[in-house]
Image (cartoon, rainbow, N blue to C red; front, top):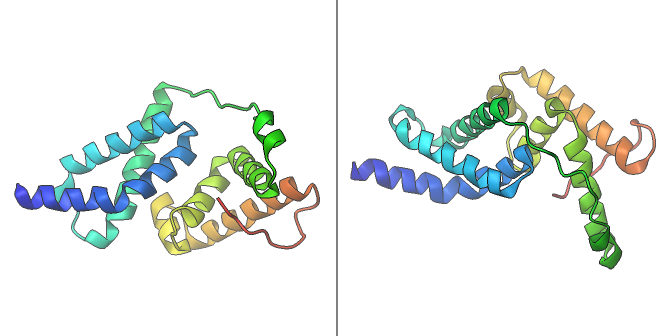
Length: 171
């Protein structure tokens, strides 16, 4: 039992921040994200013996988190906060704050089929083949979705067409 607990604590210590960041993007609610991460680790604890390769732990936990989010979403449909915080924009002296807010809002408005692979790549640091495995897609489909997500973001952020230049994602 001590070996299992030590192994579990190492996973929590190493991956809790990544899981939390991803959960916030999934549900757009910090409190709900904390609950999702806790539920993810609870399920992970129960089935820790099924994890054979420690290098696959991050993907395994992300998959658990996604499934937990889907389960919760079946029972509850969260309200999205669509109000723009104008006070923050008005007092902001830096364009980077406004740019970051605009980028986050644009990503939030993407369809899940585009935002999920993009967030896994940008926030999770996953490669295309890893994203494909997590989302049960082909690598080509993931590449297409990533390309289209960037095109859609570019169009929203520049107010132009989807064919011009490449954008850098700073979250």
